[in-house]
Image 1 (cartoon, rainbow, N blue to C red):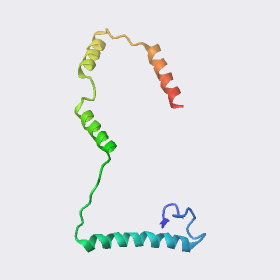
Image 2 (tube, rainbow, N blue to C red; image 1 turned 90 degrees about the vertical axis):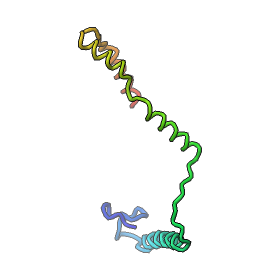
Image 3 (spheres, rainbow, N blue to C red; image 1 turned 120 degrees about the vertical axis):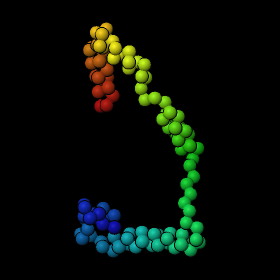
Image 4 (cartoon, rainbow, N blue to C red; image 1 turned 135 degrees about the vertical axis):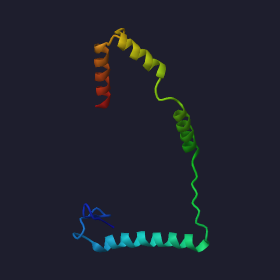
Length: 109
């Protein structure tokens, strides 16, 4: 199979500069597999798909569901900070912010 955009076949060769028979073999194998799968589906009349999830996948799904029910942010804390900023009571510690930014930068390296 040839990647038209990069002009590379499935064996990482530039198309037209190597073994054409290898590329044809890969194409033939893919085509044969697709044809046999289609024939099997058409032959028995049952065309239903089935997916079995592992217990890990089911746990992940449960965690995602429970997290989606939780609010993204603590609305009360946001409102407290907004009012403190508006009233001039909120002190911004620029040194602490800088330290955290440096810490994050070090983790990303």
